[in-house]
Length: 317
Image 1 (cartoon, rainbow, N blue to C red):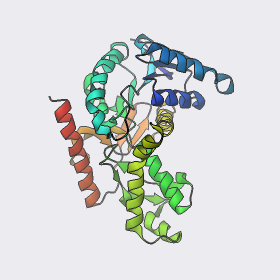
Image 2 (image 1 turned 180 degrees about the horizontal axis):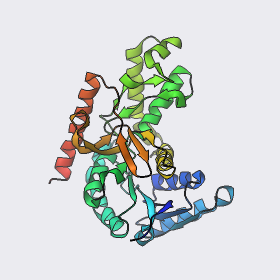
Image 3 (image 1 turned 90 degrees about the vertical axis):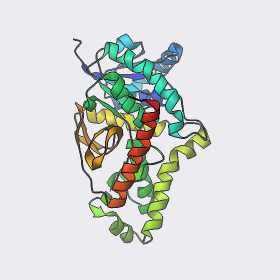
């Protein structure tokens, strides 16, 4: 058995998201070795060269283009491979194309590495996380997706802008699907321990329902707006990948809303979606139950059913 190198990661897929993630990880200093893999070998080589030229301004590391045999000792394999989301396309429109890609990529990964963590970033992330879990046979704690980590960051950013506070002081989650049926979990939201509505009133905001609707809609439409304006989103998700990798490499036990296989919480199972969990060196270490009102629980179950319907259609038993 190959010994896993906790300071080594691999990125499979060197498109906008993969290359931006590679750059963010290079800057982070988390890894001493990073291998880039792409169906277009020249693309991987070019990205590796370009990013490597920034190493004199960062921390020493090996950063190179490789193939699947190079990932045998990687602690984290980040899968960004997949077709991009085009203007007018929903994330779920991508399902058939990207499930097909995963059916070729995941077996190649597991041929060489059976002990690492699979971090799925390609969209639709919940369906592809479920697909990766089924195809890899890895324990469920070691297969999870970036989920709503970015959506949650967008929520914190917009709330911070609305309230005029540092978004790092905002504690709130987007849960469920990373996509159109996502839910803003307002019931558990607070600003440094102060209930959200109370803090809003301290800052002169009283029309809570209108503001919550506008902010949640702003989060949901963020990706579509960016795609319509510049063709793709990649910086935000790259920093989300970096944040998740930090929690793993440093064994931080951080609470993040990654997409993972559900095991009966809120009556949901047989699907991958995002709920807050503790993330550490073993991957998903425990779920974190948060307060949800009846409407939020109902919407979460609807989000799960939306995803299950797609799974049934695309990946029949």
